[in-house]
Amino acid sequence: MPSFRSEIAGVSVVELARRFGTPTFVYDAAAVRRRIADLAAFDTVRYAQKACSNLAVLDLVRRGGALVDAVSAGEIRRALAAGFPPVGDPPPIVYTADVFDAESLELCVDREIHVNCGSPEMIDQLGARAPGRGITLRINPGFGHGESRKTNTGGEQSKHGIWHGQIDECLDRAERLRLSIDGLHIHVGSGVDMEHLSRVCGAMERAAAEAGPTLRYISAGGGLPAVYRPTDSPVDPAAYFTLWDAARKRLEQRFGHPLRLEIEPGRYLTAESGYLIAEIRAVKRQGQNTFYLLDAGFNNLARPILYGSYHPMSIAPADDGAGRGEQEVIVGGPLCESGDIFTQEEGGFVSTRRLPEAKVGEYLVIECVGAYGFVMGSNYNSKPLAAEVLIDAGRPHLVRRRQTFEDLIRGEEIPKP
Ligand SMILES: *Cc1c(COP(=O)(O)O)cnc(C)c1O
Image 1 (cartoon, helix red, strand yellow):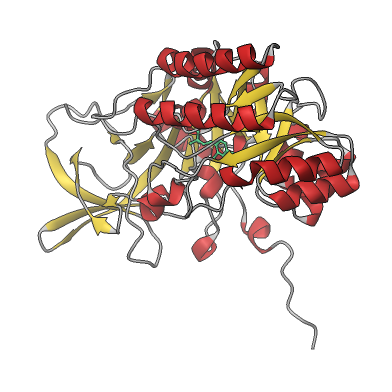
Image 2 (cartoon, rainbow, N blue to C red):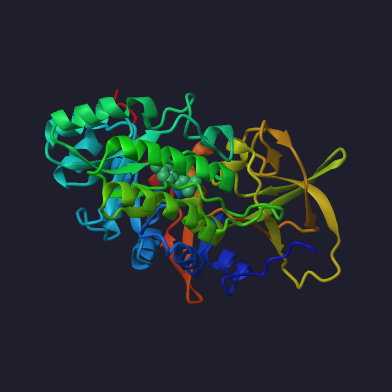
């Protein structure tokens, strides 16, 4: 099957490219809503906004009934700007991190943002400023799991969370500062499989038994995988829920009161909703290899160069695409760096992709980029950040205009002689 894509959520790719320019990220609102609905069995779906934090996406998630996680002062401000109230039960916004910087501590204290502490120091620092609060502890269960070594967030090599052997000590710290432990949280990485998940549930049960009956909720963290490769099998949200629900129920019996069960997906909610439209600017032969060179690079989508991530790709043909052959191509970007290649494997090994023949001026769509796509973009090579478009009910909305040169140099100054 040749990989053609002429429309996204009912809107023509060529029209989107002409109207908004390239490179542009396009998100399908309905796809995000479907993913939130998949997880309706959980008491709380808390969106890990670092996956895609455009205000319009946050607003969509909020209207979809999900709450939000923030890992920085900027993300707390985004959540507030998108209409999440600072305080509520369950807390609409949770700050999850391993450290406070000055600004995030100030915000959490002033706006009474609920804090998920990933280090003993956070307990001390919050307790000194806001005694009497309820907090969550993020536990590192001593093992992890990740899509890549860089996304593994548990175990001795990981900087994340409070070490499972230190829970007792942290309970003492919290008590001294009159902080109550409302919740426990474990997030060990992306791409969790079921066998691994039961280990995580077991670790949660042991940690919860230690933390005791002040607990009112447990969070399963994120890490639900998205389908990137044709060979990836989709996660079964019902099976995922069943395992966690059983752990929750055992803890409810032990404590004799109800426990809320939260899940905290990032990738799962937005990855498959997102597309990056780029224009093919050169079709170049280097010896045996054919390159499609785009106007998008790792300044727009860093996952391939960072993790060797695979993304589906397709061509939006200028005609109906009929009768075109296919070829193995290397797909790269415009940056002055040899690693600016979208078809690469972990370790930087260049690979090829079978794609339809295409001409300069046609568009190539990189798919499944709604998570850790735009948000990892940079201004490397003085490239402006791309535009973002949200399609809802067949209508495209520009939800972030492309940066201008003025945006790029804002704040820079040449010293006066
Ligand atoms: C990144 C992160 C998530 C989301 O991870 P996904 O793999 O995108 O689901 C959830 N919780 C925390 C604390 C995170 O840091």
